[in-house]
Length: 232
Image (cartoon, rainbow, N blue to C red):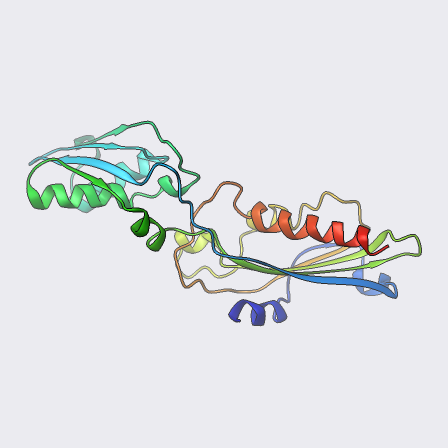
């Protein structure tokens, strides 16, 4: 419901070609699309083994970003980077989820507490409940067509929590490269295009998942093109 309301408020123009307002025709087709939050759920669960000693740490983890893990562990334990050894194991499924350092830090924290090596394996229930989710999205696309059924104008409103909130919590507007994943890089030759968005707060942690914003944009855009074809 919150995103539906935000869709009505989508007035921040992020892309414009031609003049949509002056070139609308009488025949109009419009559709709203919803993409839910998505969890990564890789076949191989989140797992890490840590051994925290007095002045150094050894860690075995299937990380997609071992540099980030190393920095996070150093910050958590207040140790210099050269005292943190990260051994990267086979990743298995990751899809972006294993770029986060949380499950590795959990093994480190437990090893420090128990004063010995600790292996942590997340249960599937924990992984799904405490994930970094692909953002849900609401989109509205409206096109007007000429007498031959060819699109003359294309208006695309897209609202979703930005992944930038993962790095800058106050971020609420999709970054240029996010809308550039499908919405502002429309592959179809339409003379008049407008793409708009709005500020959106996220109730959960947003993270990388495969094609990121192409997931929702390609879904809506290509379903809508199919709808245009069937409207003839």
